Length: 90
Image (cartoon, rainbow, N blue to C red; front, top):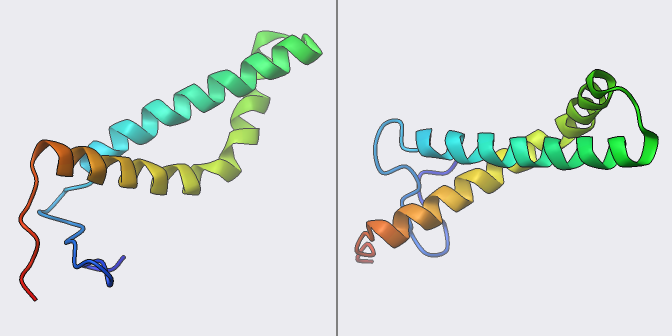
């Protein structure tokens, strides 16, 4: 990952362990996606709960990398809204 944004100069990682909060966001998003997939599978196929949840997790796995990136972006937005940093002078 780049240290700063090439177009605006935003420093991505303010401190060591900066994206720890993004892990919590990623977990919540993943849980919601898995629940939605499981609900869709259960309502359409009426499989047993264990089989439904297992297939929901399997179907979720290809989405995990993009969801991780989305969680990082959401974390940066939240952090910038709560604790803005002055833009770097160029």
